[in-house]
Length: 466
View (cartoon, helix red, strand yellow):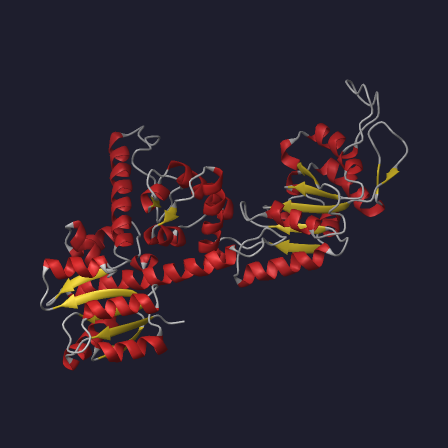
C-alpha cells in the first residue's frame, strides 16, 4: 500500500509547487488542503502517514492542527513549516509533538529528507503497534514467529506432517530454525507425550556415532563393560532427530538405511535385532545432491529420508517478519535481564530491516541478545546494534578489528582506509535514507566526490532508501 502525505497551506500556488518538488523524490501519494479545517476532514478519510503543515493559517493554525491530529491518531507524523518562524514557535511545535520544523524559504533537499524520515517513522510506529497486539496472542505451537507467506506456508506444512508418521527431511541454511521445525512436528504429533531425542551427527566420531545410535552389548569392544541401549531404543515410541545428517559416514548410512526399511536395530556385538517404533526426522544445511554425485551420501538413503521434504526460508525471504521477530526477541531478553524499559529507536529498527543477515534468524536473535545486555540507555540505537553484528557490504567491519594489520604496510593502510570510508559513507546514507545529496552535505563532502567514493566501494544508495 502506497504511503500518504497531506500538505496543508493557505497559499494554493505554493501547495502545487511543493507537491511537484516532493513527488520527484518521494514515492507516496500526495493530497493537498488549503485550510486547517479542510485538512481535518481529509485526515479522517485518508488517514495519512505524514502531515506537512504551515503554521499561519486563517481558520485553524498549524499548532492547533497538530494537537487535533495527535488526538485523532498519534501515529501520524506532523512536520511544521512557516514563513514567520521563530525559535519560540519551533520549540512549542516540537513540545506539542511535531516531528520536525522548517522555516520558509527552506532547502528542498532538507524538506524531502525530513519527509522521508517522517514516512519511515509512521510506518515503524504503526507496525510496532500491530506487533504488540500480535505478541499479546497465545504463542504458536510451532514456535515460529511471523506472518509472511513463506512462514505461514511452512507452519501449515509442519502442521500437516505432524499428523503422519512419515520421515521428514528438513533443509535450510544455517540459522533458519531446522531444529525448531523438528520440535514443532514432534510437539504437534501424537508422540508429543514422550521427549524427542536429538543427536548432532558431525559432533561424534564414526565409531562412537554408531554405538550411540544403535547401542552395544557388554564385551562388544574394549571398554564396553555394560550393555547400552542407544538412541533409537531411547526414542522408541517417540521422535529421533538426526541433526546435520549429511555428515554421517557412509558405513553408518548403510546401517541407518536398514533401520528405516525394517524398523529394527542391531546393537554392536549382538546377532539378534530389536524392533523399534521411532519416527525419524533429519536436517541438513548441505547440498545432498552434490554429495551423492561425489559418492559421499547414499542415494537410496536420500530417498528414504526425503519422503516429506521441508525447506525453511531464509531471513531475506521473510524480511517483512523482521520487526515481529525483533520485538519477540526483545521481549524475551528484557525479561531475562530485567530491563523491561528498553525499546528500539525507529533508526535502529530501520538498521535491522536493511542489514543482510547471513546467519539468518539465529544471527538476528544473537544481535538482539547482545544489544539488550550491553545497551546503556533506555533506547537501543543503531550504534548499539552495530557492535553486535558481523559486518558485511552494508555494515563493514570496524577499523578497531586489527587482525588484518599485518604484512605489507601499503596494503594494510589501503584496507584501513577502505574499511573506514565504507563505514562512514554507509552511515551517512543510513542517516539520510539513501539521499546522496543530503548525505554528502551533512558529511561536508562535495556531491561528486561522495558519488565517486560510493562507486569505488560498490555502495548503492537505493539499498538505504525506505
